[in-house]
Length: 539
Image 1: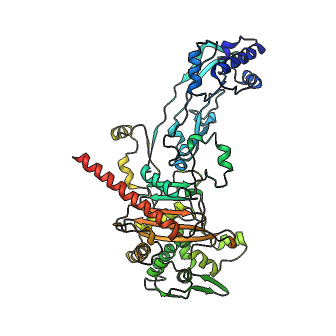
Image 2 (image 1 turned 135 degrees about the horizontal axis):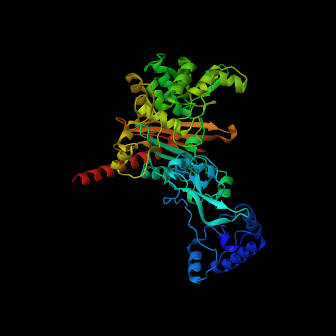
Image 3 (image 1 turned 180 degrees about the vertical axis):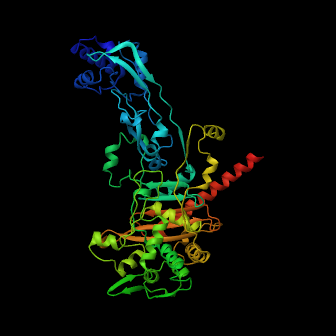
């Protein structure tokens, strides 16, 4: 509603009366309830008089049709179209894409200055919407006008203006088909999936469950924030979990690379490991007997890794884990990423008023104790095993650009999508051939050996390396567990590295391994479809 057309300079009550009368009449014509009160009208007249008064928003096509068909011509009334964000694929990749909210005008000002008045604008509130808000939004336009002391604009008197600039497209590394599979396999569970390309760190899928529909966040806000399952939390980057036995390959790598152990280093497992008066139980209560490293990885022997951790020394484990990226943010293009925790002596003194002990080393060596990671950490670690020692920053944003045509990208000097294959290398560890033979070999056996703990992840025709894990949490009498599995495929020249965690589950080999199999089947099917398309195109 245009204030200038509703009243004249020097009047106060009359414009408010006329506006209220117009709104009453419009309410009947449109068939919608009033959204603003008399006080709202008077507040607008006092503070935002030069701007149109927004009487309704999101009124819908039916109300618009009624207005058009009524033939009424109420002075000062007009329909304004405002931009809204539409997510045509609903909740697909909702935690990655995020959602928008109402913007502070300073956030879209060309030079950081404040506007005296502004019309509603949206801004990224979470996810890529937030991280890439600048490129997506562009810059707002400005209009400079003269205002009388009563708050009316001088008609047709503009002192200057600045044209707005359009936003840009943002290209993500996600494969929507693989993302859909990841979300499907997690439906009905609480947890997360991350799939990376170990050749460059590209994030092919990142899913958190339960999820939400970004189209309806505003209207369902109270329901979402009060839901005990916390669907708005991106568990893939914000969820902190003890990794359980999926951390054991890290201990093996630290021991092998430091020369503190070899592949044939063996320990006896009677079903437990005793340290003083503390007993660390193995899942196989009958014991594995004398067992070497590769077999210990396959069988996930707690007794073996407690002894290996002590032999290696915690400092070596700590520094190797730090080099891979544990205990720090990965730098992914998402907000609210948690850095996790690799505890050490300084941490224990500060937070537990105690010194680091051998029992602490045993706990961390089997992925328990104070050790905390995100599913993203575990996917980055798995990718490093898959590519034999290269740690990449997980990358979501490949480019921000106007159009998809490569020629246009080059003409504008923007990132070339063909250069994306290089990735962002964080650390070049280049683990030895012998180390990789033992650790990767053990992970191969996890899936392919007759009694491997991850044999349910087996996919016909595909060689896979994996590691299952189960970590206890909460009160002991409740016996709650996180179920994990990490995996890479194909075993030779891997193209996928993934990590899954499920809360309140039974075991990694039971709950997660079949989901890993589904993801790998989907990835292989997608590759087959893409290859077929390429062949057709070449003809």
